[in-house]
Length: 112
Image (cartoon, rainbow, N blue to C red; front, side, top):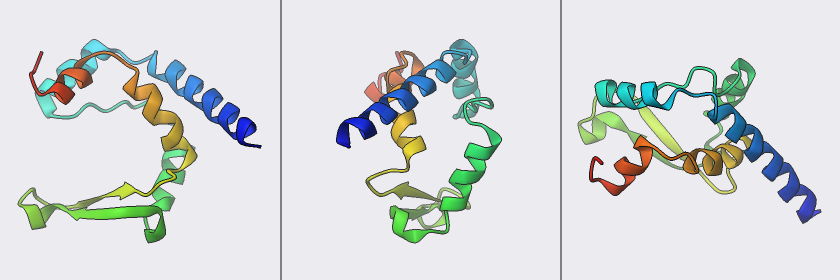
C-alpha cells in the first residue's frame, strides 16, 4: 500500500514538473523583481484552484494562521497547511523546489 501511495505521489510530482517546464522563468524573474511576486496562471487548473479554496475554511487542515494587519503588513491573512499536506501541495512542493532560478537566490538571501 505504501509503495502504491509513493508511486501516485511520484507520478503527480512528475506531472507538476511537466507543468512547471512550460513556465517562462525569465518573465517570472522580471515579474518577481517588479512586483515582489510572480503569478503562474496555467500551473493549476480552475478545478484545482477551486478545490484548494474549498479547503480554507477547514481549520483542522492548517497548523497556523497569520493575520497580516497584526504585523503591520496590510490586510488579509494566510495559513500554513498542517502535515500531511493535501496531495496537490505534496506534489507541487518537490517539483517547484527542483526548479533552478530566482527562487534559489531569494532563499540564499544574496540576490544573486
